[in-house]
Image (cartoon, rainbow, N blue to C red; front, side, top):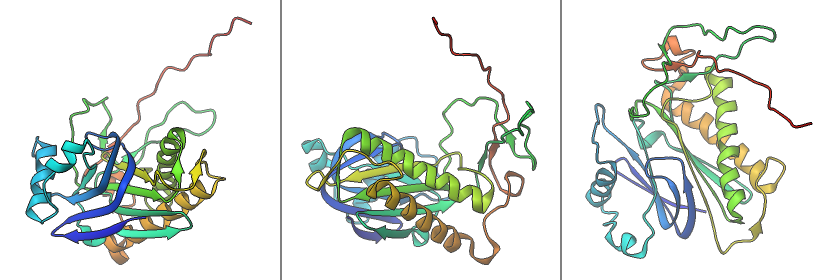
Length: 257
């Protein structure tokens, strides 16, 4: 699916005319010849994220965005505090995934036992007070890029994000006890000239392969980043992180019957 090149902490994943859908900064739908993963330095706080991405691409010789912008195909990018030397790639069938993984900022979601209403968590960590949505720290971040050689229907491309998120959460829960970090992002892409696929659920060729690729690439990325010591075992063991222990009001869905 992708031709990959890494230069000075910038990873370019190339495939001409790819249809992309991103949950990252300035995300959404796009058509571009490449996507980028960038490692940001410690203490990075540049508010002009798009400008930062353009500068970094130019500095490492990946060219200006101007030609792409003229064509209306701005390349998507995901940022992380994790070095690109820890990026890992997995391939299976019509799918491949590229993952970087750091969990110094875990986001725990305690689930109460059946019959209990208290979802309090163990192990400290910053409490979730609702947030403002303005925190763009990238201390760790699990970034997932999934590409397929199939041409996915619009709904199937969106659902591929769900499949990747599910696989990411299941893998992280097994290794760290949390389903994600405070800044995770997912980017999916497909070949518009490939064999059409209407669905991408877990029982399809694309969905099944995506789940396996995300799991295996994430496990390898975690092993590379944390070695024999392993990642933090809880929010309390991590440098940063939040615990979502607030409770929502739940009501019956009203019916006219």
